[in-house]
Amino acid sequence: MSAIALITGAASGIGAAVARRLAAGGARCVLVDVDAGNLERVAKETGSAWLAGDVADPETSRLAVALAVDRYGRLDLVHLNAGISGSMGLDDFDPVRYQRLVEINVDGVVYGLTAAVPELRRDGGAIVVTSSLAGLVAYDGDPFYTMTKHAVIGLVRAFAGPLAADGVRIAAVCPGFTDTPLIGAAKETFSGAGFPLLTADAVAAAVESAFYSEDEPGAVLVVQPGRPPVPYRFAGVPGPAGGQRPPDVRR
Image (cartoon, rainbow, N blue to C red; front, side, top):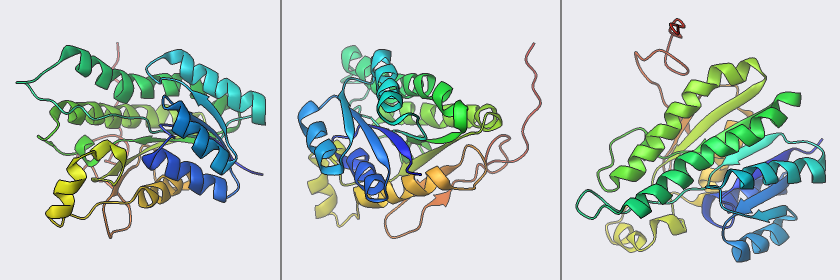
């Protein structure tokens, strides 16, 4: 039986590569992006349904899940991938750009989860969230982007146990610098320095493996050029992928 997948940020880069990879393997996909023109092109290429919308609006995620269920009858896989860079620091801080960054990179994931999880609970399924190496280390080149990607890792790890109890797996992928539109003009700098970039296809392969992985709930896969994806180990830290779960001390 073919998997039914929902992919956000699917008009280009990693999301488009995931759509191509899953569709080539027989999956039927629903693609979401704010870039309607490129999204339609990828949808036609992969034979996918598509919805032009902004993940910063919770209605977009709700409509996307409804489209998957209406068109294909269910939902099995969700790749919450939409993201933007921050490209600012304290000296050039812009509250409007900052708010947009948080809305896409954090709120978009939250809205995707709240829309998709009720459907995934019906028959089980898997969620993969795109974070970044900047979600694990302090990247001072884009500190507010780094903040959002750390938030995503925390969210994945916090929900891993409760979702697993409902038959839903959740994981994150943390790619290094990847040759996608997100890096923009910095690509020339990387090339000039001989710095290797990941391909979107390599990250897509890691996303696919994360969907079907038997790693413990909340796995965080580090993806770097020339190396197989490896789960990040939170040494000495309680919780998913890091040791014993702490007691529930809520009052």
